[in-house]
Length: 445
Image (cartoon, rainbow, N blue to C red; front, side, top):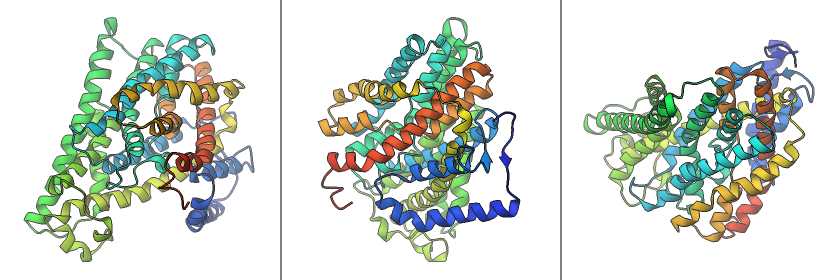
């Protein structure tokens, strides 16, 4: 599509009808979709393709011409999802079970970026800065589209799911230094003499600061809410407002202090869950005992010294999960509609298999050194390197920071192509692979 803006060929009334119909269709069809041999995002991607210029042409969008729309939509979806990821992880900070996730988020991330950079340099003939940038865009796994392979709740003790959940939480922030390095090598970001600014600000401070800011705000906010409810017996406030307020404060504070907001939101979720673990150190209360519907019926539970922390975490997670699903639907539809304008290159036919079958497995090999995962679990970690909305965000972040148009087109085509391929390939394979890796947990599906 030439030019800018979102081109809509229907009236407002018709759009209200179409959007409402799609939401009804997804709501009514969710149980049937869950039984199909592919994931919900595959359906959303297909809807986007049908609505876009590859289909009926009623929604013509492009990542470059509508960069602000894609950038902000992806940003909001990732932020909301990362808070949910943090709430699902119920581990003490010194627990050895963090090891696989940390190795994936830092060690595997670095290897992944390095291998993609080599492909970009010597096979795709990209300049060094663009090759590093491509690695930073494509290396992180996605917290939004990977719900099928993440922890289901705080009581889920599966090591494979915990590793993938923790990786998705951390690496949407740990990829940022490589994005900034790529931009710096292209002359679009100040790295400092000898790279001092990149090491001190973009790596050390932004990572540590983001995690610290989120942890402090998550713990302080959660503790204050529980103090009002349990000690002072205040009535139950609107949990939705509290959740969105905490996310906004954590994210905004981190950005204003030049730290990574993604890590701050994730850490806020982990810190909030840690308050509940402090009250119930062994296992969390059964979620079926904790009502999360709004209203005075929850007053007794919310003010209970033992159940109050679990109620707060469960209420936040319940609302956040609903919001996450709506955002996932909207953003993936946009990605599907934007495929036509992405100019996906022919090199994608070899790039995707190399990325999924060689680069990802090689990059996760250090996880074996933690001795926390079995051979089958390592196989699952090697395969489930889902790319998604986070990659779209990093791409548009680079574009907004002045990425030259020729490089922007190349990276947009590669990124959209890889994300679409991941949605399809991982969406088709997720249930068969999980049945193979965990036959006892998926024998009835």
